[in-house]
Image 1 (cartoon, rainbow, N blue to C red):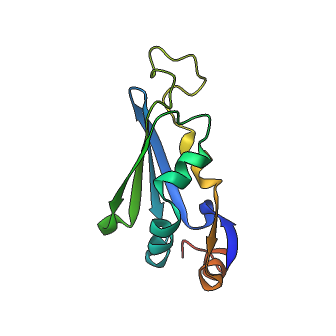
Image 2 (cartoon, rainbow, N blue to C red; image 1 turned 120 degrees about the vertical axis):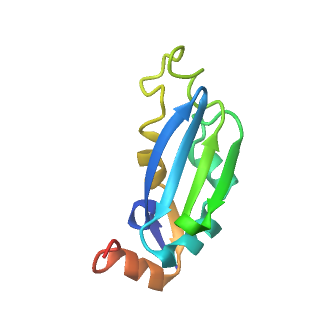
Length: 119
């Protein structure tokens, strides 16, 4: 097993709806998706966003897109129009998610770190 940052396996997008941040994580290659499903549990994401996601974390699987979507409740200080947070719409949370380190099989790490995961 190897420990690598999620950014080598996926790209991400984030936004908001009120006080809930939405973070989508999309596998760069089909073979990375099962690793994302295994490693990116709601509990793990909640720990990663400790101090930011003050409410629950929900995960939705989108296997046809090889993607996961997370809802981070009570994460934006009330939402865009009332929040005093610098990022009241949660736009940088996708970048924060991609900084998470996860354990992957050596062959997946080699593929992700090798000749370009997006190839």
